Length: 52
Image (cartoon, rainbow, N blue to C red; front, side, top):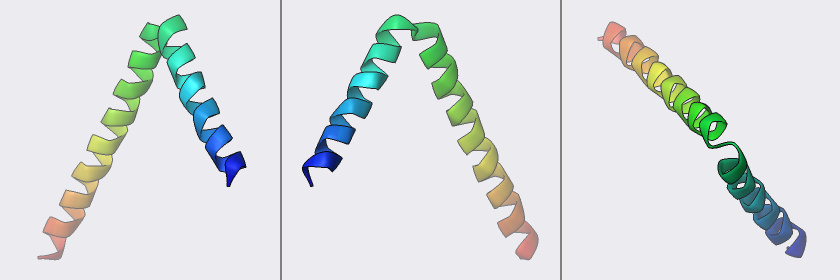
């Protein structure tokens, strides 16, 4: 179990370092992820609507 805890802290530290050192890149990454989720949700909504 401690290995999982260390990996979690390492991931958090990496994200914090990335946000501090590359804020524009971090913002683009978040925007890309949000656009991808919105696109997937739109596709799922279209699929569900076509069923009925």
